[in-house]
Amino acid sequence: MPGRIRQEGLSYLLRTLIIIPSRRIVRDFVASGAFRSLEESDTWYVSPAFPGSDVAEEALFPAGSHYIGPVPVDHGRKRAYIEIRTLLQTSYRFRSRTARMKLQELPRAARWRAKLEAAPGVRQAKIARRLRAAGPNPVMDEVIRRVNPQIVIAVTRGPTGEVLVMDATRVARELGIPVLTLTYNWDNLSSKSAFAFKPDFLGAIGHQSAEHATSIHRIPKDRVRVLGSPYIDDHFRTPPARTNSPYPFPYVLFAGCYRPFDEKRSLELLERTIEHRGLDLKVVYLPHPARVERIHPDFVDDEQLRHVVVESTVRDDYRASWKWVDHGWRARNKTARTIPLPLDHYPALLENAEFVICPLSTMMLEAAIYRRQVLVIAYHDGLHRTSPYYTMKYLHFEGVDRVNNFHVCRREKDLPHAFSELADSDLPPRRPPKEQMDYWIYHDEKPFAERLGAFAEDIVREWSKSAGAVEGVLLGSGAESSAEPGHTASR
Image 1: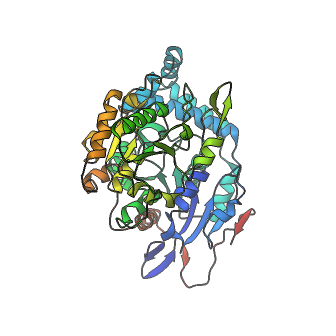
Image 2: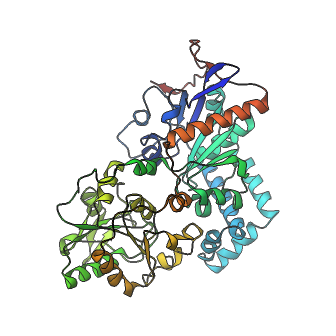
Image 3: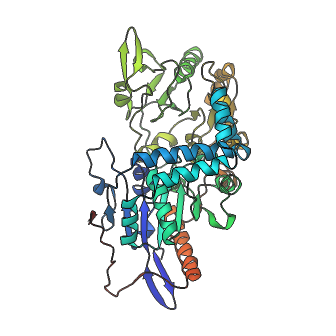
């Protein structure tokens, strides 16, 4: 059973410290059961404070585990990691097409300065200075020493705000404790991540990201295992045709994207197409919860549209994120961010859609899992340099047009025809072949938690052999962990 180590006929509990760097990771990893196979173990969680929440951090973690924290985030160390990440990503432009393209997005002077600072020798000297100035996190050092885990598991989405992941990796390395880092999404390793301290082991989402771990980040191939994604893994296990439609009418789901794109313009084009053809369906618009700021406001006012509605669960929050100013709509926080759709809403929303329209995001893959055809918007909106026509060239989108369920639309003028063809199509619901899905998001007969538990066991077993000893708590001995951090809230 995952969570136990067996050696010389004795069973040991696996003492694990899990680093949860953001509230989003709580939802998509902890709440989705990613660590369920480790809950029988001596499991400890650490996180930063989650501002703006009326729920105590401790209540977000499983009963029976130990929650440590919140551990404060040092902003000086955060700035150091941000600079190191920028230097490393600039140096990765020779390994990743995405890193090269993102560098080209900078103004010329900034681009040349970034190249000079990331040059060999200069880069290493700057990184060493930043790390010396920042120093290790003393609170994290205390936590890890007192918990004395056999393995540290950290989850990263790639952005530099995840300071605790680097802090924990740094301390664990000094103490000789293996670190397993789990990536959050399919594009993390090609476009977002750069490790100031590389993990000892890495759990990849799919075969593509495993390739990126080796080719871009130079993590040895035998230290990388393809595990999949916990919050998407359940989608593969949902029996077909078991959900009820959330709407009393036929609909097409339009899932918004993170990168800048005028979604209002595309939705208005679809509105006219439905009206002109007299189609008996509506478009349900699900805005991305964390959008990059647009050049022009693209508020979708479904009160003025007949055939387009904003997804009902997030509609009130979406409308509240906009305000009417000087005869026009403006985002209250520039990006019009909204609360994420609850995970348990996705099965019904996706499975009952006639098909899905998506301008390049993970929703493409989730829709395909639910056997939906996907109209992939990959054209330029005429406003944003990095709209889907541009981002389609990013490394992690390579091969998307070869997936059976994906229909790539590369010109705006082709959208009405492509939409009409799918609306008239009688293709039966079907999922792309497993080998196509596994390239981006792996799955098998075991749930994610079991795959993770088995990998953690293998790491600790091999690591312990190389160290000449096995650490642990003897099952059934009544012994308790000696870890008693002073600010621990265990339940």
